[in-house]
Length: 233
Ligand SMILES: [Mg+2]
Image (cartoon, rainbow, N blue to C red; front, side, top):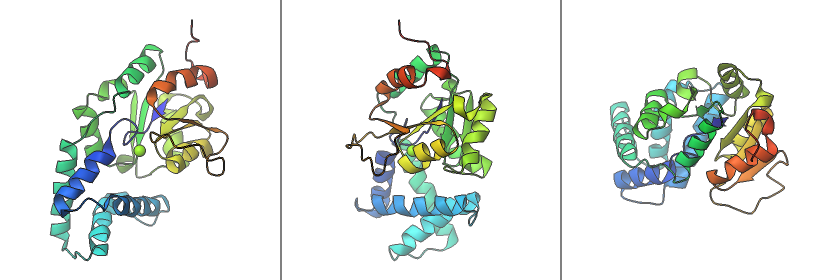
């Protein structure tokens, strides 16, 4: 079982939004921040941008689009202060620990699969007491690849010692998590915490959708028994 981290296990958006608002004095920029981040991740996946430069370049572009032109040292300082504030605001969703406890008790091998940077993300897992749950942690910043690159998923399966068809990935992003995993040959679950009505135009039939992690055990038992989850008594 592969799990995304940000906005799947950790309430990353609220922490990030508050950090950005504290630095810029306004709370209406999160959507633009996400768009800028997504476009820079896409450039990494396309091989146009080194992962190591992605966050700095993202922050420089975002501030530049706001009309804030900073030199390299000031961009670095802004990003450092933003991350420090964000880290102080990280929280686990309430459904995370019961779900991870269940998966471990069921004997399911677990991997975290994230597009974030290495030190940042390992610090987050440690801060929140999650490290002990995972057999493997795959971090884009350490591997130099990012979801939805299928190699992100297939290297995780290699590390877990299973075929992609024996693995399932869950994440909060329909495109890079669920469809990315599906295209790499894994079972795919979209965690839509907003619980929007499922749109058959955009959600493929072979992607399962749940709105909270407390629905995951039942889905694994009914749809993915081949991953080794014991049948309910
Ligand atoms: Mg996520």
